[in-house]
Image 1 (cartoon, rainbow, N blue to C red):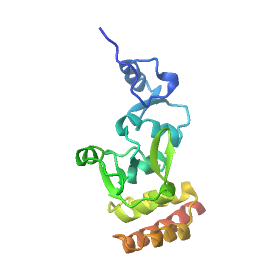
Image 2: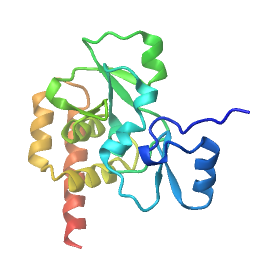
Image 3: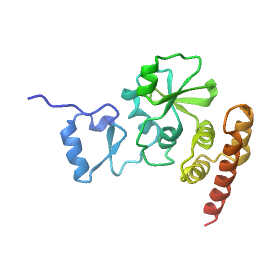
Length: 191
């Protein structure tokens, strides 16, 4: 009988445990699922830890974690149900791989993503802009408010980033969502 090893993305201190042992520890309340891996319940989890859990799934340096998945990496929300990524319009990866990774083609500059644990993730500023442009769910404004508070990015900086790409779609709606989110973040920080 073979024992399955810990999934990639599991923190190194747990790598000697099998998947069955890790899942049992989750049921016992000692570990929490973290992306496709696991982490101790009492250990602070960083953006790098969350990004590391995505490395095996993405496995292509041209793919960039984006949208709600990037917001999760930055610690603004719980893990999204579906992986969201983007690729630079210049990267040209096969359509089948783009569909598997939930990737959209995007105009993205090198300064708009960071490398965390061998995974490219949109910067907090780019993540805010993308969420504001593409987020149509009712909780989008709440997520943007959380992102503004956690990242320390000002409304002026977010709006300037939108202005940088004024010809993109949904910019007007994005400005409105960001303005609402900034007002909400301001109200929450006063409490």
